[in-house]
Length: 387
Ligand SMILES: [Zn+2]
View (tube, helix red, strand yellow):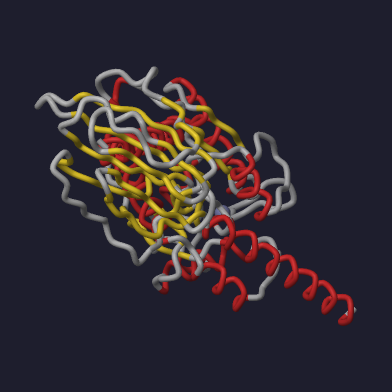
């Protein structure tokens, strides 16, 4: 049997290496290298050929105009600060990671019609003076401004959310007793959350909507396939042993990050150990250390919004609920997600008070409402930051 196990390990290791390779590619993206202004034209250089750029403009109250360019596949390298440019027609210039796969450039200008930009190979060129044409004989940029009126918030993007109900099938997750199992609670909450999000106009996908077993790796792969904007994994926690059942309670939210506390480590080890999909911790840690900084920051923000609204909603109707905080951890189920991702521990299924609440449909409703509000707050803040 030992030989078989070794073989299995080797295969797992190879799969992880492949994963690493592709994740590297995905996270690596098309790196922004530098920008310069020559002869009234702003040029932005990337590490490889530009695939697609969209553009729209927003008239400002003060008479100026904001010109917004999205470079798909564009990545701002982690150690690169915000670029600055001074030019007589430019009031401000910003470049930022708008989403894990989109780099956004915003120019506030006194000019009325800066729409002669183009891109070719690895260069995006933007003339900064009305009427001036680009020196590049490249592709013109798709104009997205038909749908964008005066204000960004007037267009509601249809965000895509993947909800992951933890465990399922032969994997029961945490349990307190015979029938009260984590896999059931989390599926109920996930379904309620799906309804709420759909009512709010989101496009929602679920990794499971029945009592089925699904590999952890498959869950984030699914989210990547669906091009989800965010990934939410829903779980319930358990105390380390029966004797400590009274000591552990509350709502916790985790996001993937190399840094983690002792408590977070315990929680992640518990969730991770449910399904053995490769215990090569060295490889896993190497993987996590490759995480894009932007994604960690976004996941943390998402976690904070979700945590705040969950606590607000459950406390409104059920009195005090312990705030377990928003913490970094190495959850296997979050590894590989190419979008901001969080894992929600809705409460302790082993705590005398919480185990009753967790199976109460009203409590589940409050949890789902809180998560949905948190998600909306997160997207609203993200849009505001880019205005
Ligand atoms: Zn779980």
